[in-house]
Length: 82
Image (cartoon, rainbow, N blue to C red):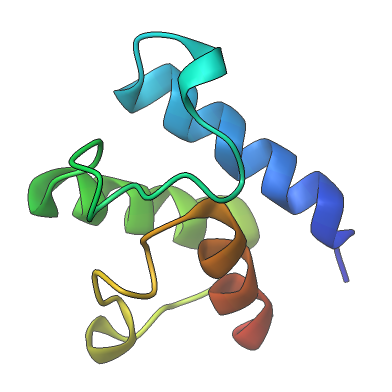
């Protein structure tokens, strides 16, 4: 099982590279969806990244804006499917 802290760091790096202007703008607890950084289209690409990277399948009904609203929540969701 991957280390949760490494997983959060990897997810944060992806989010910063894909959606943020400055890495200082995003932390593990920064609101991504409710804060407007990630939109619904971007959430789909983020879900796909997670599924490929961690070789999992996240059911669409679990890929909610609430579950994807910050890096910590995303990492916890991924852990459910490992």
